[in-house]
Amino acid sequence: MMKRLKFAGIPTADQDRALAFWTTQLGFRVSTDQPFGEQRWIELRIPGAETGVVLFTPEGHEQRIGQFQNLSFQCDDIEKTVEEMRAKGVDFDGEIQRESWGSSAIFKDPDGNSFVLSEG
Image (cartoon, rainbow, N blue to C red; front, side, top):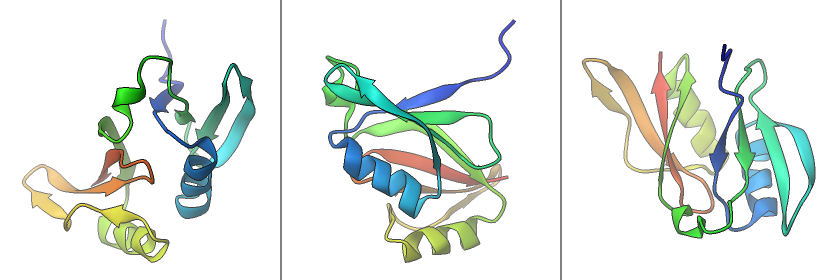
């Protein structure tokens, strides 16, 4: 039986720049950083969480860089989290959206990938 999602991939054009963003600005921790063909295999973890992300672009998937990524990150207090992320230089597309199902905001990484941040 499957137990959990181990990681989700985030396509990136510059692994060093992406690594700095996800660790310095968002507080993720490196669990693996090793050579992998022409790139590196970089696995990151959110402190206290089981699921991680991988900063890696499979060959032939370069067109995914800079697109909306179907990944949603959850926080307890969206206003506080957005404020903290903006203070660290993270770009958001607009303001926090409030819907009947909850609140969310869209942020971007240095490659222009977009992600959902939701409260809940």
